[in-house]
Length: 275
Image (cartoon, rainbow, N blue to C red; front, top):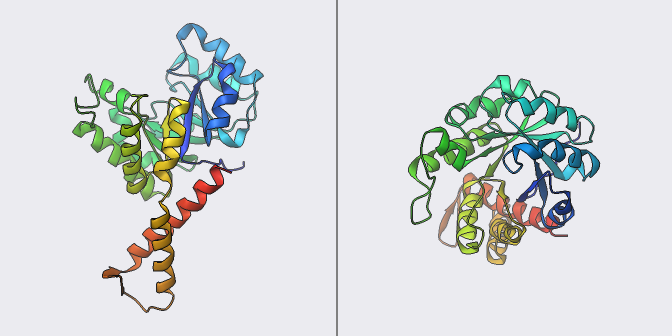
């Protein structure tokens, strides 16, 4: 089974809106065709038909299926078996048994309940999991709360903890971590700040809900020209150094060299996603 290609800007698209498929693919690095929350209960079957009848590039498409313990899950899988899609986003992933139900697929495990977040390390270790994503609103709902953010727009402590837990679990097992969506669509400045933090913290991508957010996410993940130039010079200086060395007044050791390599790697990845 070929691996999935994931750039930093990932866009949700309701599976029952095939009229939006082409625009989503045009704007995003990868598209999540959503059979779960974005589709009303009465439209689920129509969404599955649209999924089958309007194929997209399977190497750039993820299908979000309903949770394993729901009646819709088996119908989702039956529809997907009629397509070339082999990367699923499993809503409300909580246990290894959930992952066993999608054996044979690449899985983006969506940890969006209290149990899912607490089990993120063992979920990340599962062989068929290629990425982890966290979900703020469902998480808070699972706790009986009413809002994932404060009035200022910043995340509440429990949300920040879950975000960090999923990022650490993904990193510990070499899997991609995907940051949660930013639901205030007009607030592009807020989206930029949150995504800059996500990229700097180690997230490999950010999910989104509107095409207008794509360019902002790419901008946040793209290192500045100054960062690229400095990373290049640091790595060049390291070729002539033995062990720890000083560069423009800063001590440079292996962790700093890894930061520089990451900067250049992100620069190259963003370049490919915009070509």
